[in-house]
Length: 344
Image (cartoon, rainbow, N blue to C red; front, side, top):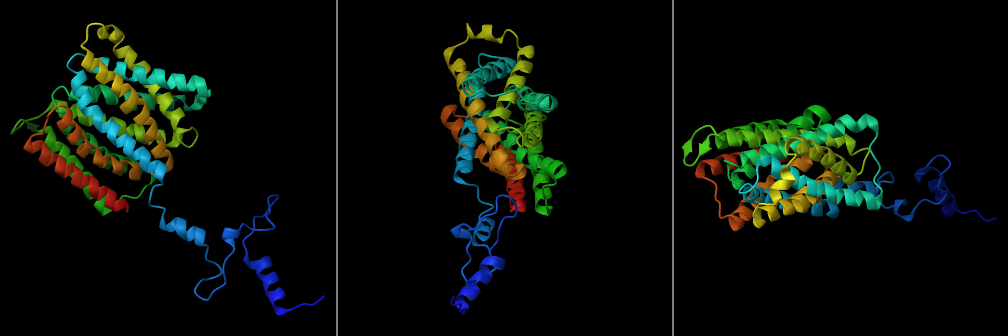
């Protein structure tokens, strides 16, 4: 058999330099994309696929971008919808009816797809998700919007970005540099300014404090949900939490269903809309986002919600926040941008 230098070189590279998997699943012929070209400008140890994924790791893929857009638009539209619903319903009635609708939709999906129950050891965590993410959050937000306009409420909720980054730093050791800490501080200062605004004067607003409690609550929900998303799909996590949260809300407003009989059509339609879109669909999208990217990075995208909410509120209700509230909102958004920059 004739042996030449090329055959010897090719055999050497095949035996020692081309990566292989060890074990029962050993591949004798590695996939074409992992064969490394031997030119002078490229090392034999470089992996083009790994280099490409490293360069693009900070850019979410299309499905995540679509989920972010859906979440932002639907959650932004919830603020003016709550204002309309409050003309005929109490805060607890709105919260229960909204998530009763969402629960029915998710129950229908569960019956069709056969969603199983969670493991018993995860019930306490899921119950906490339901309470903080749906019961406490919605009651406080609805109560706050009785005295705070929709645009201002959206600015306060946007401070969730800073709170979420802060919580993620302590619970998940996600990095938060000097810019991040400054951003968290500015977000709190901005919310403080908004909480002292009423008309064109400065005075304490308990409605703003209620909205800020809602902000803390939804931030805790996002942190509590993150570990569960390693075990369950986003639709399962969302369904479990909404069902439990709706059960808690029923205890607060057991006769809410009867209020629909005498209520005007427009506020009722607003609740139906919130149950389907900002409720079931947006929360499912948010769970999917959290399952794909870090909590602090996911939270940074929520900074766009106040801008979208202001536009929708202006179109829908004709509301414009006061100058003091806008000043506080700008400070909050500045803090949010700093938190986002600190992670990038």
